[in-house]
Length: 166
Image (cartoon, rainbow, N blue to C red; front, side, top):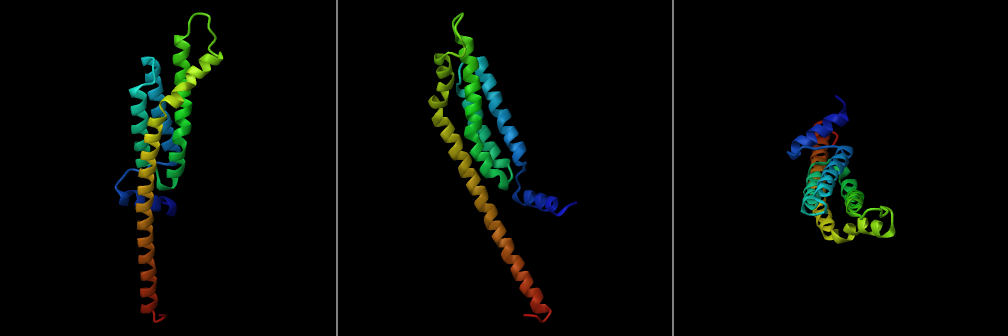
């Protein structure tokens, strides 16, 4: 087993939480938001189901992604939100258009993109919650790293002293 894999597994075991890679975390978040968007399309509106998927999915992924991928995970939440909301809005608007109306008219496009602004508060809640979780996890792992560094320095000093070098 390589050194990197040993280090990752011991860090994951010491935190007590499962850990997934950045790519897996982003894929999981995209799948959660697409599921919420599909449910919204079936319901005919971007409502509580999508918003629950957004908030819970964002917090969940911030909890389980590796520490080194936290920034990109949190930064990608608004991007994935925008993509899924506009896609869901487009299909909902297209389904509600009158016969013969163009799905690409200015009105249809604005109507499809309007939920981006309308549901912004929920994006903000999910983003701030995920950022707080990411910051707390980073601070905890940073203090654990500094404690292990101090222990390593102390061990080197004791070893040097035992060999008569210090």
